[in-house]
Length: 331
Image (cartoon, rainbow, N blue to C red; front, side, top):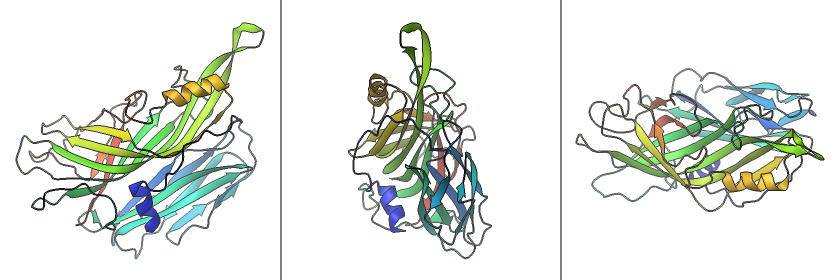
């Protein structure tokens, strides 16, 4: 439980460095997996974690440490690209947030994935230890708090727009943490929420470079950016039916970023400079993104507020994020 609190409050992010330019060989399909259930309810459905690689042949891989009792992984090792299935048994668990960080190792390379199990009470609420930072509010108006996940899928060939990246055609961004705010009691008032969230990054880039002595011919080069960062996040649910909400996020100091691949130093520098780590709004940055609400869940009945549910992006255009409100936090 302590580890989950550290992740949600973004404390574990300590440095900001660039990895070697050696070719990437190990990649995972997800930086974070979130399972949800409720006390006394059925166990959540299994989820797959894909082990990917470039090139296709890879040395054997293994997953550590041994999973906790509520989690089963099969297989925990393999000899090439393929899926492993994560199965959760929530029988007998009390409401709360359960977490484990898994490490996938292949040769000298390692990648991590955070697995969260969120068990709510019958009202869809979950308790979180009190040391998660909550913005100050007037004493007469206690804040509403929600466990929220923002999610983006895309980025393939983001740098130059090429669609054939071989590393991972579905790069992912996830922000996961707690948002809180004083919710309106009258119609025609926006609902504003803020919080500090952990941002997980798994992004691929493709570029082309001229062949030596043959400037009219080109070779592919590929880069892979992975890491974590801490984001100061605000979200506004509009007091107008059908509009949805507005996400803004600003990068805070600290972070763990690794850039690897086959591109030259200049291309790597351009990727690093152009990656939307902060609040510039470029590329797939979460800053200034609309959240669609086709079912009107953020405005029902006539009051704007966060509600447990899925808010999918209408399409997967560059920079469009979706939102999942996992649970309401108990006072």
